[in-house]
Length: 261
Image (tube, rainbow, N blue to C red):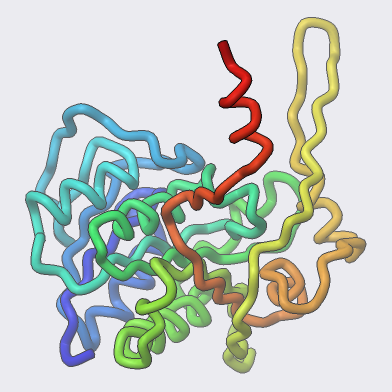
């Protein structure tokens, strides 16, 4: 793609380190318009507002709304001529099929797919115990794998015909430390492992995603070719995905419909 125009959004907020890392990397060879949430909008899924306030920002526009809001207002009102939407880089991985609908980062890319605009969601896997990851990856150099993989995909994916089959790419990358080699890319599928737990303590019930603990312990059963297996082994996971829900002919439902009175 020759000098593409990219809409860059995220869910951590326009002033986050990961957002700046991608903005700087993409600005080196593309026109970038930032349309991102004013503050943290993590894990809001495809929540949509009826109206949002817009502020001018040094990088573009800060939106008082969700990532999906940002995609819609960007493509409809602020920069309708963009060639691609990039969402990220999120601090925290978005891995597994069950996470796709929860993630604000991924949801911004899904929203773009309904506009027939190619999109890439980019997230950083930060190992660590509960809470520790939120205080890690606080320098732009930690996002070098994200920056380089995203640059490569923006530059080559459209011309290679990737988006003739995929609506969007869900990309997860390892953290980069000084002296590390760049992580290689692996094409993956979202893991289907689901391990949510709920434990009651009196009037409160705690919800825990036990997958993260299993990732730290190295006890995941995810096979080769899945996004989580790639990321725990130090590779960039790229999952080509489609946005619309599919519908298939279902004989059992046909029979129920025929007997309904």
